Image 1: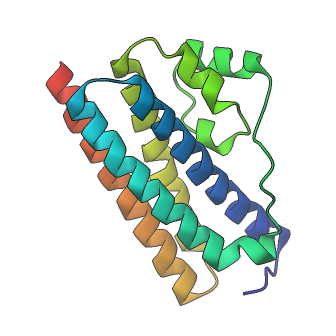
Image 2: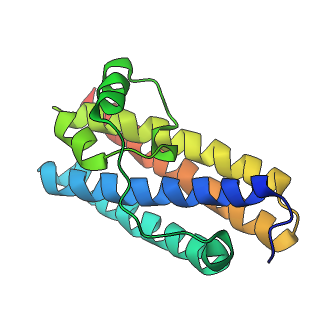
Length: 163
């Protein structure tokens, strides 16, 4: 598949960034959080994020020209986010996930961040499906959107149990 427009390439790069950041975020949370109910959901999310990234890599990486450079940004950006708790597109930004996780001081806060990002990712992939120029691309993005919504459901369940 050749990208016909620069916007297509940028959208795929953003999709891959979602998955890379999500993978790193859930991995670090898995190490940090000891609650077994939360760890079980994080393990499932980790597995799915790996699958999502693999789908995007196999389909688009060679053409998008991705590199494996470390994702970083000023710590100030992360602190602003944590204070605001309302920027669901955080995984679409080039941030230092390690610093973000360090700033999370309770599991509920981590789950709220995860919920926002999963819902944002579901909407993002839905929009990608709507703009896809091939049936194959449309199906792939719809599946990713559906899986992100499922993730949000699991997180909402955990939050409901926490009260």
